[in-house]
Length: 395
Image (cartoon, rainbow, N blue to C red; front, top):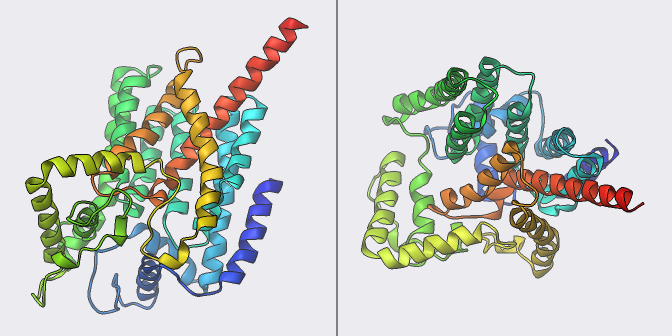
């Protein structure tokens, strides 16, 4: 509690120092949409034209507080409250499947992983998504919830997650497979029922957004951002670590009059053309992007936010986590992981392959880094318990 309070307090000071300036394009987009919603101008970037370029989960969340009078500084502080809540929930999550040392390690590791703090100071959806993901894992870990209530809660959580970060569709599929295969304390019918309820609720939530896009944009799309993102990761000048900083000027159409949906389809087609005509290079690029999921630095489009000092800080905070995670995998035969721990590990690694279809970034990884921290904290607890047993035996 003291550590979580310290994160909120230092986050508030940091938010006041940052002020109301929004440093990144994505932040400005989310905030503009939320402002337009509050002032009755619809889900729009410019207050006039309907958009689906940004998914609606985070702007709708911001809208709730902007409508109550929150400014940018208050919204930043809210992110630090969310981060502190994630730390406390991780403590409870690990405490249920490790000893007190592992449980105590979880929030300490969160606080020491400074990129979580840095990202909480931005109007990005990853901090909120991280909390929702930890809640979803807590639901899966609960022995008190039946198949129906578990399916309902998971459907709500993953519906909100998908509307915040579209890629969580993949994690929803992984969780569904895990319930069917690993939730052996439930009968087969209960497992099928829980997955069906989860998928139905999530589909209904996401379906409302898709229906809105059909009416507003004339196409049942989830987002119109997928095409340009795919091109950033699969084009002539794309690098394994370039992301949104990739120069795609050669692909930008002239004054063609394409609307948002058509432009998204155009960019997607250009990316597919590159992959089709450069199969060997595209495969190598994909493999490198998978590895880049585990990188400690990214080439940023916003060069002012890059520095050698920040890269070194990321290396010394993420590096030990990754090393301990690797050690946990190597000792899997000797220290057999629980079924839930296997899910956390699979989600962390498998999303590297999912995101690499587009491109991999540290920011995209952050909600899953909370799962990494949970695995590492449980591993620390396991090692501490083994050491105590050895000491007691020797004594």
